[in-house]
Image 1: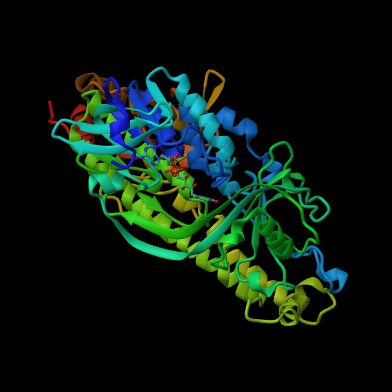
Image 2: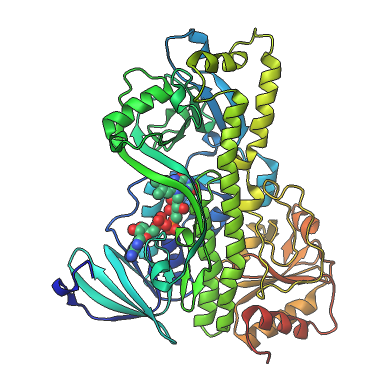
Amino acid sequence: MTKGSDRMSEDVDLETPVLIVGGGVAGLTASMLLSSFGIPSVLVNRYPHTSQLPKAHILNQRTMEIFTDIGVAPAVLAQSTPLANLQGVAMYTAFEGDGPAEQYARRIAYADGWGAGNTDPDYLAASSCPTANLPQIRLEPILKAHAESHTLGDIRFGHELLELTQGEHGVSAFIVDNDRETSYRVRAKYLLGADGGRTVANLAGISMADHVQLGHALNAHITADLTPYFDDPEVWIRCVFNPDHPEYLDFGCVLIGIGPNNWGHRSEEWLVSMPLVTDDPAASEPANVAARLGDSLGIRNFNPKIHHVSKWVMDSVLAETFQKNRVFLLGDAAHRHPPTGGLGLNSAVHDAYNLCWKLAAVLQGQAGARLLDTYTTERRPVDAANIHASLNAAIHHLVITQALGLSSSKTSEENWAALRPLVDDTSVDAETKKHAVSQVFAESSNEFRLHNIEFGYSYQSSAVVRDGDLELTELDSARLYQPTTTPGHPLPHAWVEHAGVRIALRTLTHGGYFLLIAGEDGHPWIEAAEKAAARYGVAVRTARVGMGDVDLIDIRFAWLKNRGITPTGAVLVRPDGHVAWRSAAADENPLAALSMAFTQILAITPM
Ligand SMILES: Cc1cc2nc3c(=O)[nH]c(=O)nc-3n(C[C@H](O)[C@H](O)[C@H](O)COP(=O)(O)OP(=O)(O)OC[C@H]3O[C@@H](n4cnc5c(N)ncnc54)[C@H](O)[C@@H]3O)c2cc1C
């Protein structure tokens, strides 16, 4: 063993229902969820600190719903970009140079991004939670503090898993405490590999498939005053092209304002992302990064404060399976993709949300172990679609460059000539070129608007009871989320009211509850659900939702619009907010119908 087991003493062994390996977003989310379901867990993380790099930052609506369930959303929102500064994505020419002044610092394209600061009606209708934006350097400490506040979650940073073995009844892991140079064994019923793909998959014998490598990237976290160059508070992602340096033109230079006190162009800190176009190891030295940034942005003598630089591979990979006996993979350990589309961090959270209620149900004796098989069945196709969408978005980025007429193989003059119609309104082909670029940029909304991919994803497995309905005809499978109660889909959002208190319907699943929603005349379903809950020992909330004599008033008719059932029907929702079963109308024997649904979903024998 490389860490030298001979220099270590074996500490007291630990027993826990769940060992989580990795204290990034996936592992910390899993820890908080398990604690909220009453399941103790131990989390080990190799380094003593959370991420030192800003890395991912977009927190989509589904992630914010999950953070709301966990109770961490208010702390995240308190530090996130204000909505007014979270509206769009724009492209610019470089700021300064030796050519005519009017060609510099010009905005050449703009698109709404991720709900346009919660002004896009589709996003407003889809969820009670707006998109948020907080880089991992600020997000992870919030998640860690919250995970540590639960007494059931034992969080151990600076502890590293080196070995694991699986038996019929559990997993045994060898952990070293890197600070104290001691080691100990943890015995767990289940192990979650949330280690970013570094160790667990290998040790568990899970292989990776579909490897695609797009190239190398250079990320820098800097402090710089860019207020002299932009005046666009509504923009949060900027891409700058500098024809004076054609060698950097193919992807441009992406700038993301990361606050922390001011936002938009007034941001004090920035995450900068550029393709790495050289093998020279010196490229990531701070002085060279500053020079490269100055060239890419067109700022003479640019002298930002550089906090961190990282070189990383833009690639995609998908685990063959997300489960091997008692070991599960989640987050980057199970799948990696390019950052285009912002799906990496978000899908890590979504994986944890799918898995943890199932683990809790099995550990608490409400579900059979076969329920856990549905984790791979449900999440792997969704994560494969995420990979596909991220790759598509990354490739489309190059299409934008082409539409602009820019290329690293052209001279500066040729590249500026290509941009001329966009920066010179008197140019004869200004309107034609602007429209052509707008068309391509609108098409490239598959990078900035993946609402159905990131929010509307659905599941098909034995933990969903199909009702014979035809699947929805999708109008745009990536960009357009269409609410439906077809089993497997996420519960459509509706604001509902009881005694003057307004809540989002979906929040009734929070804390690990199934939710039985009946129509106005669905009293028999409510009674049957209460009996089934007692029979199978599951936590179920019930409500008749609609107008008139109901428990929850459908104040904006959003539920009526999307419920897909009659006043005598019912919809059963899982603790992760996905519809598990529905009945369009009354049933002669509602208890038998619900018993059948629960036994299938929970993989248990009917009583
Ligand atoms: C430089 C960089 C920039 C990125 N930028 C973006 C972006 O702009 N947008 C985007 O969507 N995504 C981005 N990503 C991807 C995004 O950061 C990940 O998708 C996200 O962090 C996944 O979270 P995770 O918890 O699954 O894994 P990670 O964040 O990788 O966390 C895994 C944790 O496990 C720990 N660990 C590893 N091995 C062990 C072990 N043996 N024992 C104990 N602990 C262990 C690690 O120390 C780490 O803390 C970027 C990634 C990198 C590396």
